[in-house]
Amino acid sequence: MNENAKNVTISAGQIIGICDVAPGHFLLSIKLPGSFSAPVPGQFVMLRNLENGETLLSRPFSVYGFRTENGQTILELLCRVAGRGTRLLSRLGAGGRVGVLGPLGHGFTVDAAVKRIILLAGGVGAAPLAFFLQEHVRRVSPLPVTAFLGAKTSEIATMLQARFTGLSVTHLATDDGSAGYHGAVTDMLSEELQTCDYESTQILACGPTAMTRALARLLGDKPIRCQVSLEERMACGVGACIGCVVATKDAYGEMIYKRVCKDGPVFDIREIVWNHPF
Image 1: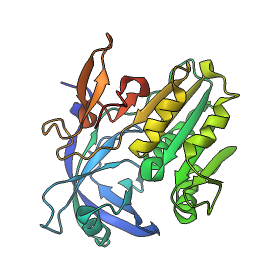
Image 2 (image 1 turned 90 degrees about the vertical axis):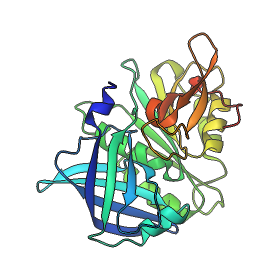
Image 3 (image 1 turned 180 degrees about the vertical axis):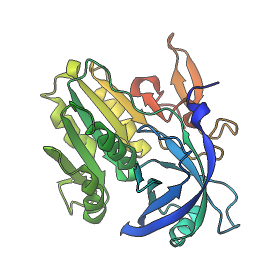
Image 4 (image 1 turned 60 degrees about the vertical axis):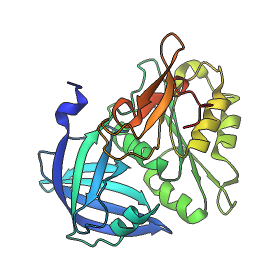
């Protein structure tokens, strides 16, 4: 049995907080049983609305925050309204019931030789990276971290930035130029890489496919470590429906398909066949 699978549970959760944090984005705080296993940054959960029978399938969400407070286990999810399911979730109030399957998948790992970490996020792709940062700063000797955050507008950028306070450097980019750099967040990273020590740096990234594909092109054959968390639609979250497969390369360069939910969602960026139609 996969080691991660041993800790997976189906739990009934109760919403204890839900608030709009930016246009089309909301934050869910869910109380879970104490038996729910602590996730590692990069893992996700499948969330099902138990208050409304109109949506049959669960939705995947990266873990944004997780803590034990006054004896309660609390899971935080940063959600973007992307369709009918997330719109119905956004209308739940405190006390609403949800089903939570998780924690699922493989999270981020930092190589022991790394001396500096760069976080690259686009939109709600900031969620697993914010959780990584939360856990990282608890270490006795956390490594220096630089964050690059991309968003459509200043309202969303400001919301994302709130979880990255305390860093010596946080770069913002927006599509409309209303905050920070006007353009793609990968363009800002490109400038950073001109003076970056490749051997001692690791990049952790999550965001839309267009961003992660651009990152893969940008890195090319530069000898810099990079892990990317893929955002894919999925129905089951446990590898049964094969609805989230992506093309990857094995150790011999042969193409094989892997499931984002079970084999990922975190991959070495050079493992993905980026020019393959997903």
